[in-house]
Image 1 (cartoon, rainbow, N blue to C red):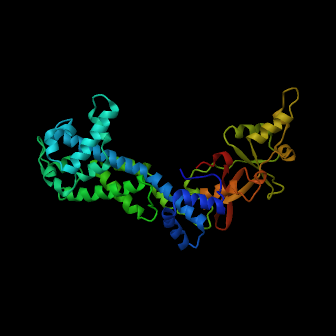
Image 2: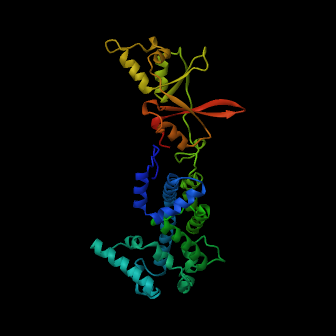
Image 3: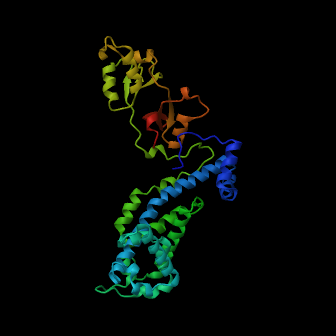
Length: 378
């Protein structure tokens, strides 16, 4: 979402069309932010796209928070009343007119569309998070302080087993309201790039942990919010990205110009690119890939056969079967790598097919990996 392998060109007509589609008032928020960096309108669109990526990243933890909260509430209400508490008169009596109307409308709409008897799980799923959130307002203090039969807990602590004893409905209300407010901003495509993302994420995790600490750990281990937050748009970075150092970049394979093609074939079964070195000329480095080897074999077969041991890697160099490659520092980002592959200022035929990844240790440059163009979807 909101990512591209190429650098998008913003001319005056494109800018006008985009601003008309997004609306000037909506876009002004991003334009004001870009101006703080001294950036042009194109930089404002970088913030717009970053906002979209943030929304995408937050969807997962928000999803878990909403589902786990409503399911826990459903289980508690089922224990307190009955499985079909949504249509139970006793439960209806505890609702405000506003909540009862929201519940009735949702159930009626679902019944009309389904045209059959409904399962309780379907009715739970059809209710908005606003409905669930509103049940923690002060009007429902009595509901949450009721004791649950067969337990020594009130309803609020039965619903949220990890809620500290000294905390109650008011604490949960504040937490759920904050999460719901943020959820609605994401759902309605509002700006969230200018918020404190770590505070928001903590609120989401705190809500999830009330129902299950293992669920919180599971959510944290799969959440990508932090990686997106750490990579806001920068004026000197044409494409967004994540640090290369955080990825398992394929390790380099080095062979000599005098090595046999048969040996290279074995390596290419596992690796997409091979560095070819010339010991007599250390500065001379070439890169070959599977496609180049296949072309060499195709053009040098005799009656459909070729003796791979009779061909050296130097033969591929002579035939021009090496690929264009560039260098990139391990400290750079995936956005920098994308730009190196798809720089619009360079003719497509002159763009690199591979990137030699290096790092500098004690002033010495060391090749630590190689990225081929087909692998650029990080």
